[in-house]
Image 1 (spheres, rainbow, N blue to C red):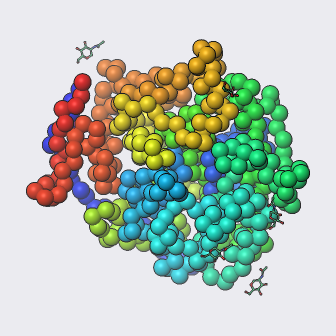
Image 2: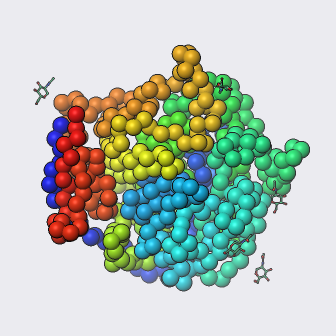
Length: 511
Ligand SMILES: *[C@@H]1O[C@H](CO)[C@@H](O)[C@H](O)[C@H]1NC(C)=O
Ligand SMILES: *[C@@H]1O[C@H](CO)[C@@H](O)[C@H](O)[C@H]1NC(C)=O
Ligand SMILES: *[C@@H]1O[C@H](CO)[C@@H](O)[C@H](O)[C@H]1NC(C)=O
Ligand SMILES: *[C@@H]1O[C@H](CO)[C@@H](O)[C@H](O)[C@H]1NC(C)=O
Ligand SMILES: *[C@@H]1O[C@H](CO)[C@@H](O)[C@H](O)[C@H]1NC(C)=O
């Protein structure tokens, strides 16, 4: 294998082109985020999980069939969504809370900061999970920082009332409603069930959520995605997840009702998505499609052309900031440069897609950058995905793929673990050993292998596309000032005598 030695690094500073006419109308935006939500909804052809409110919103939106998070981990994904910069660029390399302790760089300009500076009233309701405060300032803030996360993230009646309070304003606004549903809670609040599906359901000790009609699902009626083991334990787990997904759905319905009641449905851009993959094996913390693909729909009162249509264009959650700036008609100030940050945005506005589908999608590409989830889970990966191919670079490939506390305790993972230990059938699409042990490079031809099981990186016929995608990842790493750019076979030298001529110096560590 070739090692990159003395690769010159051209640290180019680009700027996003956002030249739009100043909007004549007062414009607002509402971003609604699910927590660990996946495709458990009618809009994405799930026939069992009932989500009439999300489906209605989708009918009024352009529905993205190929949208991806740049990182499948909560805080890094939220930070990327709010800054337009991937994890390695904005500085939140892993989870924000407790011992994990990650924060974005001080100089990063988040969307809430930019909008606030432009006289737009900003609000957050629900899960924040990013910091520091001065990078993510909101005029109105009801989050886990000073509330119970169950109240601001799962109690849909409470969320409705907070939304009402925020929307009682005459200023243009940006509201970010980040539900905690359908996140697991077996790890933190097992008394409410694996997905907090019993919280507020009116049973003794559970309290009640007046606006919620709980829906109970039968484990045997579910359609499991290909990457989950077809076992009774998993089915019970997914049934609980669906109940919570339906609560999220009803919550979204209430928030949209509040928006309508405030008279702003016809001047507000509404974006719905989720932060990362579902909390199941091969989901969250993975850059396989099972962990990185996200639901995404964008509803614009100014774009009638494609309501209810589906786009197959590739989108990234890194596109949300450019989309919002485009919507408000605000230019991004790319001049902020420091030792830590190059203020380049590599995403694009999604608004043109609301008008028409591009005729040529063959050159589309999205990128991913994962570093950690929990502090102990150092597993940096870089990823590029085109319409047809996916390349993943596992930088720490000698290490077993790490498992988080929450997933570890889940019935689905415990089932896989137990069955593996006792040499029984796991009914899973991989062995646990295959899941843990990953090669440095993984290349998949998604046309023939959408489940990403057949790594073609060593095939002769793959060498051309391998090189193309590898180079694209390196270019993106350069553009976004990635400290991992030389890993794992080189050391980046970029200060002292290398200041003007940064280099990857080879380690000779391939054996
Ligand atoms: C939480 O903090 C925000 C701003 O710091 C404040 O406006 C809000 O009232 C607080 N909420 C609670 C429940 O203390
Ligand atoms: C809206 O705000 C005004 C003034 O701050 C207040 O009097 C009114 O009760 C509020 N309305 C709602 C529905 O909260
Ligand atoms: C949910 O919020 C409503 C309104 O604040 C409250 O009446 C209700 O008790 C809360 N439910 C739970 C389960 O905390
Ligand atoms: C796995 O095995 C442990 C220990 O034997 C047991 O307590 C647990 O219930 C099992 N879990 C599942 C999901 O089978
Ligand atoms: C693959 O490529 C190598 C080097 O170019 C060559 O030696 C080898 O014969 C090729 N193998 C096949 C099966 O084409």
